Length: 144
Image: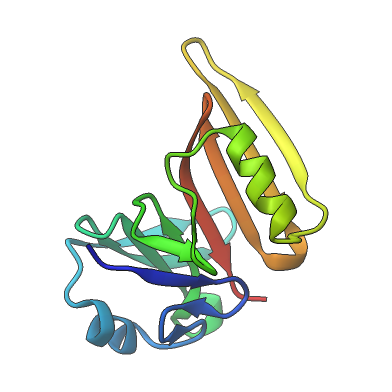
């Protein structure tokens, strides 16, 4: 098991936002999938490197000269100051974020037929936590 530190607004482990894809690949190895997303209506292009073994996706945007702009993780190999979040429930999550002084957040709830998605977004940290029902499934964070 790898243990990587999530650094809100900074990066992950020794990798910082705005690094190149080559720098990222040098640190994490070759991705399982290398995907280009193109939003023609918004003239937006993004390259996303997916690492299945880590539960990690890294986004590099054309408008940022193909440098690292956001990261998403879905495995419990990642922590914020020693606190692991993936798989915990909302009550435990609430207790953790209080002790960590994350500050104010926005909460959105999306009702689906068979599950409920809840998003906690800490805009000042560029940090988002995604729950499906009562289980934290993904953490996303990005550059300033």
